[in-house]
Length: 130
Length: 130
DNA sequence: AAAAATATCGCAACAATGTTGCGATTTAAT
DNA sequence: ATTAAATCGCAACATTGTTGCGATATTTTT
Ligand SMILES: [Zn+2]
Ligand SMILES: [Zn+2]
Ligand SMILES: [Zn+2]
Ligand SMILES: [Zn+2]
Image 1: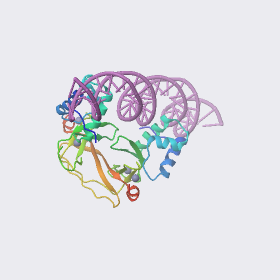
Image 2 (image 1 turned 60 degrees about the vertical axis):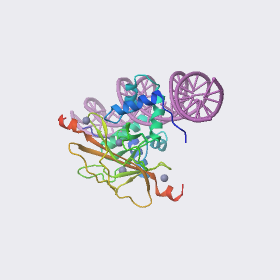
Image 3 (image 1 turned 90 degrees about the vertical axis):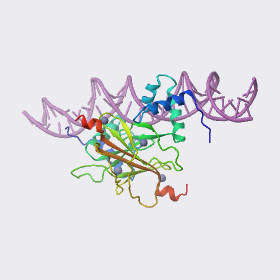
Image 4 (image 1 turned 180 degrees about the vertical axis):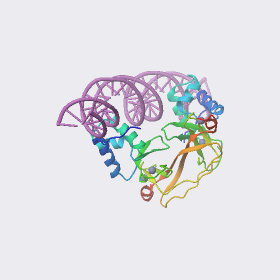
């Protein structure tokens, strides 16, 4: 396994995540970075951060992909089994760290990862009475 | 609401779904149609079929999007709350009609749709001892 | 059956997102 | 300071999905 390095770009990306309450898409990250580095570099940084279990990927029903910081980084077995919420109005995606689905699988499947995304209206947009 | 029509292309797409045991991507459908119609037409047919609750969309963690026939088409309230399984080896995606997650949401969220996709190894690939 | 209305289609053009190769640069270890 | 390896920028490409518009096909009306 390669050893990852700390670079200016990587630090900048991490700061963007630190500042954000919600999950971020590649494009949103790029905008906030303000030209600090190339588009491709961001993709590569995101990949490294995922390998290092520092961020995780969230894939939404509409096909959009976002990333969020893991705030449980140092567990022995690192699994993202929490749910995510995607607001159809403001398009924000947030981690619901405390929402974990329970389910019963048929035999003969080996489950390694789950992706549980709920969509609808977030508290903000619900109150705005859309 | 527009009234949808039955066209050659639409019928052909439906036949492809009928023949398939697993969910299909736009590209896979296109290949099976063998040039019967344009790429764009397939997108438009898929959209119509989704509006008519004949197929549903499945979005995978790796960002790929597939479609599958609904085999519960004539319920009053049409919701896809079943899980899907995505095999990391053969990349097949199948509906697990009987697997439905239970979960507890915080207040103030209005959930309209869920997307629950599990990934790992399907029975076929598990037996092949990968 | 012919005419009118409208849903669908094909094509071309575009946009967004993600990937790859490679030489140049930066980082971390010696 | 030297060296090895990871990272970067750039250009080029691939894939996926969208839009506009004139042409075609289907359905409804007359
Ligand atoms: Zn919202
Ligand atoms: Zn999360
Ligand atoms: Zn498989
Ligand atoms: Zn399904």
